[in-house]
Image (tube, rainbow, N blue to C red; front, side):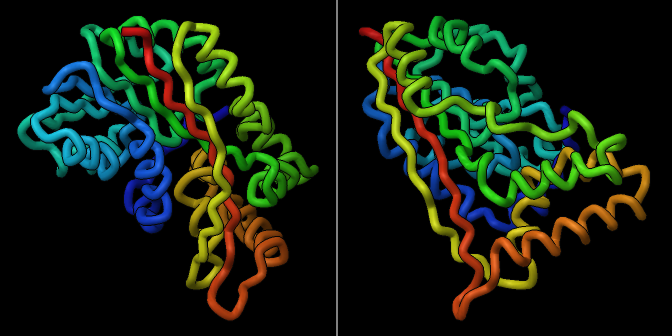
Length: 264
């Protein structure tokens, strides 16, 4: 899979819809061990969600971590007392201190075998600390299957073979529950399908340009003609799969959530 180059401006075009699951995740996080908690946000992106952590726990020390220099540049606009940002790759990040909360919003689908990282992260939590994350669970949706089918077609497979993620990028809710309880946590795992009502021309294409399509855009960045041809063909498929209605285009989006609390 190609490591994608991120575009903060494109990603934030649907910031309200993308941030809603983070609000829902934080709503299930209970009391933290210390009155002035230490919090890590893995995959902080443009930092707009990380700022919500500082607002939820005033006085906390919050660090947002990301491996995209472009995202971190945008995120640092949110920096302030108790809120900073640092470059780190979640796949190799080793906590250097004790945290009350480690949170991750729509990151782990990009990290192969991410459940193998849970023991390391849980060991870094204070007793009674929390690991909370949400991941997209929509890899069997047309937005993803059509992209993969097009990339595997004769015209594109030599250029795009192995670039995209597949359905096993995330686990099922039951599998996450088994992982986390098996590690001694009290775990709350659930799933939600949001029905995002999008407006504008080709809004589903505009959505995936900020996230799922990034590996393709990155792989074809040196060939604008090929990039535009792929995007045009994919756009036509999306128009059929997600036709506009009288009030906009509905994008069903399933997400999987987990909140795991360590023993006190």
